[in-house]
Length: 248
Image (cartoon, rainbow, N blue to C red; front, side, top):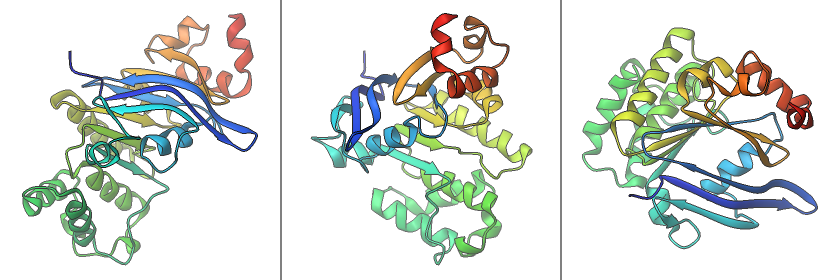
C-alpha cells in the first residue's frame, strides 16, 4: 500500500511555557478531505504552519507521502500547496504575474497552458491583467485557490477556502475541490468555521481543543454519537464545554 499523503505523529509545539499543539497524530489519505476544526486558539494554525515548514515543531514527525519534512524539506514542499485568507498574493503584481512567479518557483511544466487552464477553472480571465491589490476579497480568494492548484499538489492545505465568496461561487469551488480529491492521487486538509460547508465536503473531521484532538469521525454521524443534532452544535460544545463531551 502507498503511504498516506500526510502522516502526522505526536506533533508538539511550545511557545515558552505555552503549549499550542500537544501530541497531535492523524493522517490524510489519498482521495480524502479531512476537516481540521476547533475554536480560535485550539492549535489549528500552528499545526498547519508546521506542516508547511513555516514553524519548526518542538517534537514529532510530519511525513508527506512517506518523506520527512525535517530531512527532505524541498521534496515535501514541492508536493504541497496551500490557500489561506491571511496569506494574500502580492498586491502590486497582476493575477497573471503572480501565477507565473509562483509557477516558476514550483518548476511547473508547460506553465503558460497550466495558468490558462486555471484562469478558466476559477473564472479569472477578466482579471488576468489586473493587480491583485485592487481585486475584491472574493476575487482574491479565487486567485489564491488557483495559485494553490498550480503544481497539482499531492497535499493541499486549505484554510477557510471559500471565505468572501458568494454562495453560488462557494458551491462551485467546493465541487472543484471534491473533484481534485477524488480524481487524482492527492488529499486535502481543510479548516473552516462553516460547519455546513464542512459537512458537505469533508470525509472525516478532527476536532482540536487546547492543542489536542478531542474528537474524530464522519461529520455526518459524529454529532449524533455525542448527543448533538448538528455539527455546529458539536462545535459550540467543543469550544465552550470540551470536558462535557467526556460525560456523554
